[in-house]
Length: 411
Image 1 (cartoon, rainbow, N blue to C red):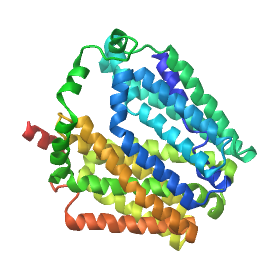
Image 2 (cartoon, helix red, strand yellow):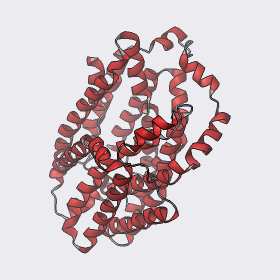
Image 3 (cartoon, rainbow, N blue to C red):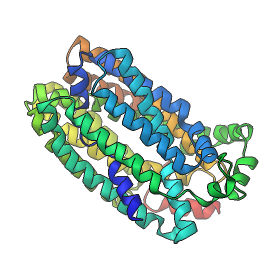
Image 4 (cartoon, rainbow, N blue to C red):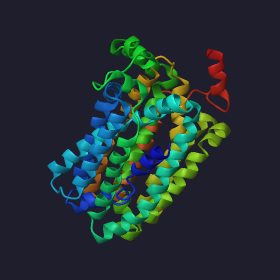
C-alpha cells in the first residue's frame, strides 16, 4: 500500500488554497464574478454526481482516477497562464470534472484491491493513514503557499500542478481492480456483485426510493437544515482571505500559517465529533452549533477583529458537524438505494449553495466583504429559524443513544 500513500500525498491543494480568492482578485475579477464561478462548480457537481459513479463502474476505478488527476493537473497549471473570465470558466469546468471522476472512485478502488490482495477489513486502517499523509502534505504546502504567492502569484499553482501531475505517474503503477482486468480492454465489468446491483436497481426504481426516504419526517427538514449550514460555510469561505489580509492586516506570506491553524482546529473538531454526538446527541449538536456559527458571522459587523475567531468557528463547526450529519442521514436511509439517496443529499447541498454564492458576491461588491459575511450570517439564522418553525429538523428522540435504539427497534 506504499504506492497508495504516495498517491494520497499528491491529492493536495495546499499550495494555493490559502490564497485562491486573492489570486482571482489579482486576475481582475470582482466578487460577483467569483461567485458565478462558484455557481458553475456547484451546478456541474449536481449534474455529475450520479453519472460519475456509473462511468467509474464502466471504465474502471483506476482509469477514473487517472482522468481525475489529469483534468486536475491541466486545470491547476492553467490558472498560472489564463487571465480572462471565459478561460477561468473553462478551468473551473475541468476542475469540477476532475473532482467528479475522483468522487468515490478512490475508496472503491482501495476496498476492491484490499479485498482481492490483502483483507478488506483493513480498509479503515489504510484509508485513515492515507488521509493522514494527505493532511500532513497539505499543511506543509500551505506554509509554503503564502510565501510563494508573495513572490509571484503564479508560483503556488505551478508547484501544485507538479504535485498533482506526479499523481498521474503514481496511478499508472497501481493495479487495476480484478473485475476490470477480467473484463478486457473495453472497460466491461466482470461478473460479480457490482453488476448484479446495477441490473437490479434501475433509475426508475430509484425515484420512488428518493421520494420515500427524503420526504418522510426523519430526513425531510434535516436535509434542508444541513444544506443551509454547509451552504453558508462554503459561501463565507470566499471572503476569508480578503478580510484576513485587507481588514485584519494579516500579511499575504502568513496566510499559509493561518490556514495551517485552521486545519489544526478542524482536525481537533473532527476528532471529537463522536464524543460530542455521544454526549449531546444529534439534536443537541445540530441545534446549538449552527446558531453559534450564525452569531459568530454577525459579530464582525459590529467589531471587525471578531472576524478571525469567527473564521475558526466556521472551520471547526463544519468539521464537527459533517460526520454527525452524515451518520444521521445513513441511520435513516434503507440499505437498498443508499448510494443513490446519499448522492441526492449531496446534490441538495450543492443547489442550496447557489443563491448563497450569488447573494454574497452582490453584497460584497456593493459594500464590503465583511458586510457580505454578516448578511450571509443573518440569512442563515433566518433560514434555520424558518425550518424550525415548520418542523423540527431532528426528532426529539434523536438524543444520546437513541439512534442505536431506533435501529434496533426497526430491525
